[in-house]
Length: 137
Picture (tube, rainbow, N blue to C red):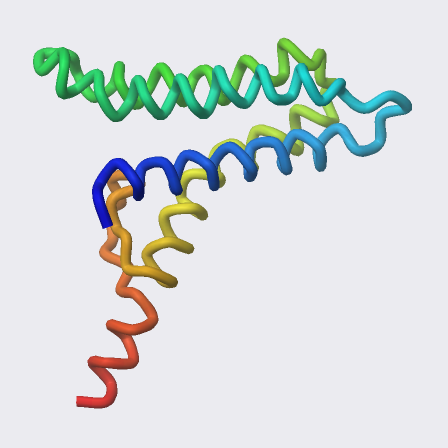
């Protein structure tokens, strides 16, 4: 599969997961956030953030990795709580999920389809096919 197609699949998955997390965190509100605001927020955080992270190190090779990974992470951690005016309880739910979204996507895609390039990960995660293939031999 072409690299750009995998990137788009990762992006769509992250987009949907981000919206699901926002809906989960704000589920107890009397008035849930407007769908247009959730879509705009997800577009900025996920689409712009992932595009920036993917291409900034190619277009700006001297840019430190802390910038091209840190800026999207900072957007993820701060923009939703500020824009949606989350309560402390909502923030306490959101922050751990925000930290876990990328590793969960990486682990799921690594296990299910053997794609290990969603994010830099300290441990190699074999796909289920690799795991059982190694066991059979």
